[in-house]
Length: 208
Image (cartoon, rainbow, N blue to C red; front, side):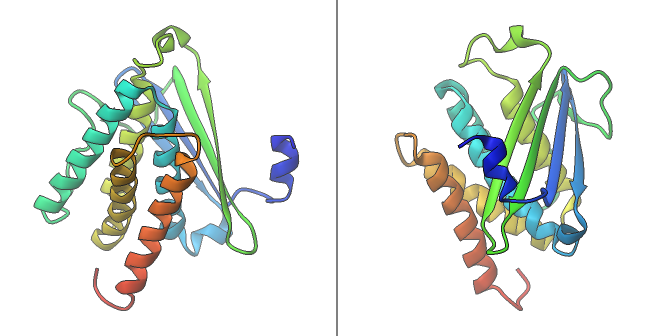
């Protein structure tokens, strides 16, 4: 079955994201459907969990470990600082409102069926392929993850940020605990989404 045929059953995306990168600078543009705006934070959480799980699975072994360690470090810093807003991006990298002439553009769409099933489609438009000749030296994919995590850290409420952190922590723990295989992306995504649902359910009506 082609991707086009598959997606026709999902209708229009409920959320679209474009992550643009040029050197040490990056920007994020969100396109939220009217339906998703009523639960914008929920869908951003779902997107973050699914996107980060997928990007980790796409990396070569060296960058997988580096990205996991960096995510674990940022999660620990947030915990130690009681979710005080902090800089996620490595030194020298900046999140800007807009990037001109991006060399790399990661785009993604989140789809939802009437039964609540979610599907994430991702695409990469790479102008400078010379930087990605070695699969184990990919500075761009991790940068896209840091940019997303930084944007959410900057914009979400403390409660919402904690929920996203729970999902990311579940993904990191999953990947660090096992040798990866072809089915791990599905399982990592499932672990992240389930941990978010459980955490929200356990704290429903309470201040998280």
